[in-house]
Picture 1 (cartoon, rainbow, N blue to C red):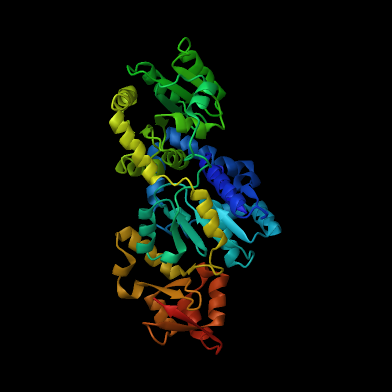
Picture 2: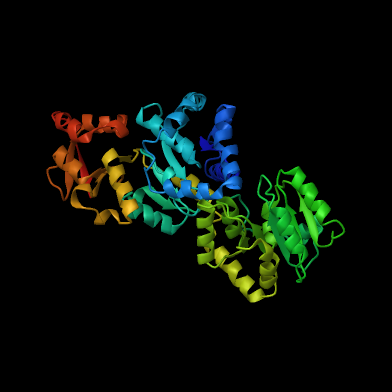
Length: 470
């Protein structure tokens, strides 16, 4: 089961890319992809989707504040929001239990949190893998228990491991993108099909799946450019925007091709010289996979601003901070072929065109036991993130310790040093013997388990399991 949430189009696009990867690796597997919001009531759906984009439009500063406030892992672990989510996703939980999957792959944090809770309550026997869809890690994505976590880039993986997540549970996979973006393209055929002139640079202007109204301003800027170019304007599913753009460029058919929603973005990206649009996680990763430099406009505060920072740092993009200088910026790039070529090379260097298949392969091979993070360990991780320190630099009692199955080498739990002392480890440096009832209790409901008191009586059972300690 591949689970997403239709907040924008990116999460479902990533889910589709993982589904395609699974089809190549396990063609006989029974695979189902589900948008969790399609199983909820209309009010909750609007709250999660429409209300978010209203905030993006009317109060972007509030979106940025919310993103930063929820950035540290487990900060909202006790938030009333989780009760609202559980109340409105009863139908989803029922549907998932009936399907009874062996593997669950989530490309949005909402289903990831719900599946994690179901695992804790023994309502599922599946493995849970979580796939982030922006270049920076964001705290809402981390939950407990889970089996494997996919970060979009190496620095995000490093961040997670410095906070204490065991390295064997995190992979820097990239963001799953549609297939074919890195494959050779028949340039002449694609240009002919879309009415594009040979040898003239193509500027791909994207309004996103919903069709952003700012696109009209981008087209006005392009109309003032001095360089020879031809623009393909993709308006998404916004028919009103498409009509507005067509009226604006009337009489300039030689320079502008206006499209609504298209399933040919992979072809258009591979013949284009520049992409102009917002740095959403999927848009950005698709451009990188295709080796397509970006001209970034209107990034949403929070995740898109951080995506932009990464692309600028890698030399694969430029950012327009003034709406009235977009044409000037594009002109400068088109008139400097060497710089444009260097940006394209940088994009190809950081692109991960096979991310969907890599996520699928690792998910199928995930450790059978989940990683449990005790409530005290979650608090210690949150404190470390807010203080900006690595887990190894935390004071002794709150230092995170990892319990490892010596037979498989897989990490199975994160506890604090203080919890280990309460549980009575025999040798702090090598191993800890824990009663099986304790491990079962940890599996049952880790968020509500008070290890400090429960450990005293749980260790009275003689049946023990020896785990390596690090």
